[in-house]
Amino acid sequence: MSKPFSIRKYLRDIPLPFCPGCGGFTVMSEFLRAIHELGHENLSKFVFCSGIGCSSWIPSPHFMADSVHTLHGRSIPVATGIKLLRPDLNVVVFGGDGDIVGIGLSHFIHAARRNLDILVIMVNNMVYGMTGGQVAPTTPFKAKTTTTPYGSFEEPLDTARLAVTAGASYVSRWTTAHPNELKEAVKKAIKARGFRFIEAVSQCPTAFGRRAGFKNAEEMLKWFKENAISIKQAEKLSEDELAGKIVVGEFIQRQRPTLVETIYKTIEEAKKEIEKN
Image 1 (cartoon, helix red, strand yellow):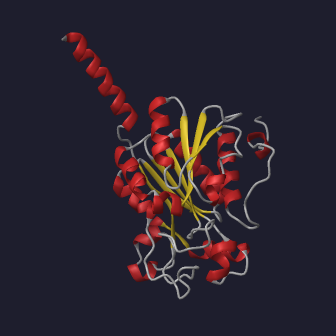
Image 2 (image 1 turned 90 degrees about the vertical axis):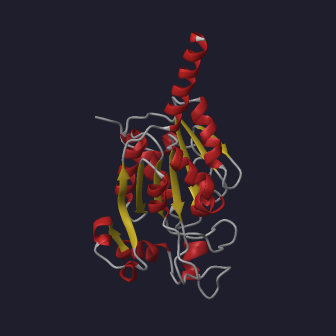
Image 3 (image 1 turned 30 degrees about the horizontal axis):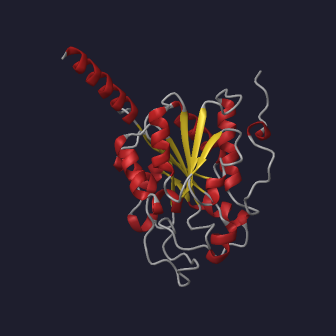
């Protein structure tokens, strides 16, 4: 029988930075639980990259692993370099919605297009949480933030569907009210190849929730459960009926040649051509 899961086995003995009620700890816990269930006794086969934001603190400096804390929105380019140099390692990026699809949107799209062999976990708290609660690309329509006190006048970016369109090999979306589904998605993504993207919709009672009218984290989790619908359910609804809903599930799983495979194959072909000539 395998040993019972203990999150402390994977974490350094330093305080966590999350506000009370933050969903970041749920994402951290379920990721490490998935690692445990896959049989990894430690994180020696992983390298983590993160940018700037609340969720970027999940791996660095808390995981007992090699990690790189990069500039805002630049975690995916750094992860690209690491994966090209060390294709044997599992390279995982953690970031928030502002970091991944705000500041870092171009990198996100092109990594999916190239089918870069990394896993990106985006903790979507629907706001720029660490920098003051400003409106983000994923802020729900009409939601109040510090920069939209009368409500956001923009429709939110559907990051999961964008990843599918851009060419990702694996895409899923869950909320922190679906911890087991989130864990299973992580397990499947780690075992897969190519650009894998998991969106974890997460509560932020401090910077988003109180301005959006939620009393506490419990109310936000209840809202997630009540408004989350499956992809199959979403297909039967009109655009107006989908307003305010959170579509969850596995959007795609497919096999495509990865960027690393293509580059190394090209290098070998070039070597043979040089030797022949």
